[in-house]
Length: 137
Image (tube, rainbow, N blue to C red; front, top):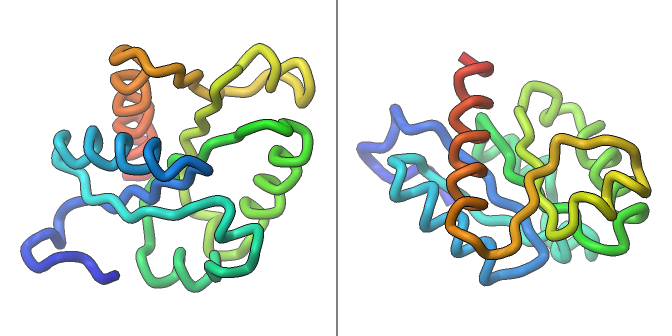
């Protein structure tokens, strides 16, 4: 999926989550903020149905919004593998989770944003993406 015509100036935000509904929710919120998004499903990565390196090389996202779901230790290890991919080295990450205290207890302190369905959660994600974009500039 290439960038739509006329969107050349919009930064690309990749949204990876295990829930299709959450991917669409985050895409809707980020696109309403004037950002271009591309979806990714973590299950597709794990099954090898989505070539992560090709996805990143093709879309060249400035920021990746990536969810850590239970089991936290396994999915944290998978994230470390994802982040070690060469084309991802320049990407900024915004991490989300549904239970930050449980994640932090298992893997140590993280900067993950807890998303539990409140509008404020989505505002925090948008704010974190904007901050990550400012840092990438």
